[in-house]
Length: 51
Image (tube, rainbow, N blue to C red; front, side):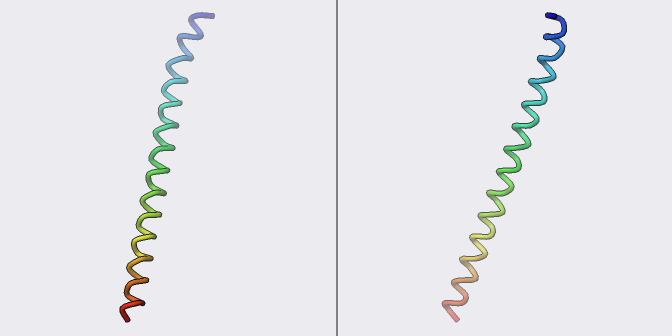
């Protein structure tokens, strides 16, 4: 039983780290998209106001 645990544990740790890394990169990507959208929206708003 302990051998199985020692075999499974590194795999679980590796998978969880990969999953958390993927989630971080995805949230980072969406944050960048949101920021770019916000910036372009503000620029568009300013050009409309300035005529």
